[in-house]
Length: 128
Image 1: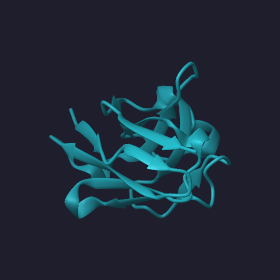
Image 2 (image 1 turned 90 degrees about the vertical axis):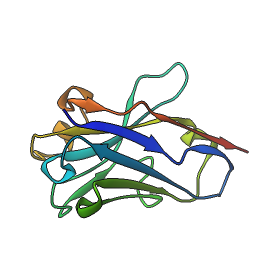
Image 3 (image 1 turned 135 degrees about the vertical axis):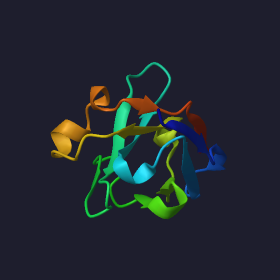
Image 4 (image 1 turned 120 degrees about the vertical axis):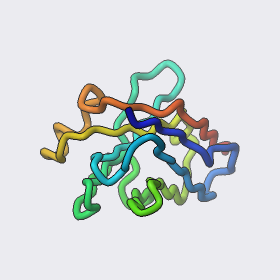
């Protein structure tokens, strides 16, 4: 089974940028649809973004659209989340997730149950 490890989180100020990385091991990332989710204190896990296996399609939650960018480098077995113009409401633990299923539309991709593999999460804290 593929193992996912997120990194790049930290404490930043509002307006700053941060890039999260998701490294896949014991697997080939190219065979997975990859997503990012986040969970803030006291809230349910929330969909952030998803990228298809070949990176031909992406989808973003309205709350991050225009500020966040997901990308992948299949040759390096890496997935990234570039976060710009960070806001305090972006504060959460961010999780990388993978599924062998193909992208079937945003409603499908936003469901956490679709994803079979999850990283341990990385904390992002944005101060005002």
